[in-house]
Length: 298
Figure 1 (cartoon, rainbow, N blue to C red):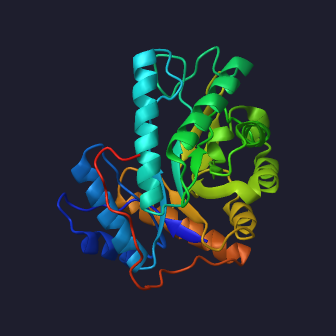
Figure 2 (spheres, rainbow, N blue to C red; figure 1 turned 60 degrees about the vertical axis):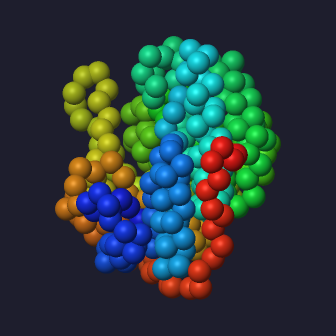
């Protein structure tokens, strides 16, 4: 397994400085910052090449657009961006390109009454197929991060998507906490971990590491927390993850500053010791071929 997280550097940091910060933090996996301009994408490929050279796994390229937007103009723009970023992830040899399905509501990542309708499930299947068939990646996977109010919202529905989309380049980006959308799920966290890895294990390409807590605030108030400040059994999750690929990236996210990430990493590493599993440290190797950016190429 490879532990990773964001790094905090000033603008203009060189690829070497960026890599060295990951090494200083003991991260064996990284997020790949991406942008829409040719210069942004060329820079992303430079970072990817530097990461591979240092033995750091490029874990994910995040798109974060609303692929099922009700507005057709927004939906078309999201489709184009997903294709462009999936192509970038493929050239960078990232473990995956990740998005959420989106929402039919005004808030691009928010709830909507029809988000969990079967018609929406079919729409997601169609759009993901079209993205993959347009790009035809060979070195990465397109994935959807789970969300509490749109597909995939559970291990079972993620498996349904895998079967329905039926594309070898479609994989799983696992986020246990994002599926905790009721007291039943919260009080069944161990079961949720076990079901997720048992059902989806062969397709998991990356994992987000977060914690979760539920307060007494009415009606139901479930909060994402820093690892170690909630009720998730990280030793159990890491034990399950360790049975998959040794290169599997597990990524910290959504924390406000470097000190919080340090605390989160310390907790996760302690849980790894408890589970008797290890994170792989970066091992430098010869420079790989990373395809250059070509403007307009998909």
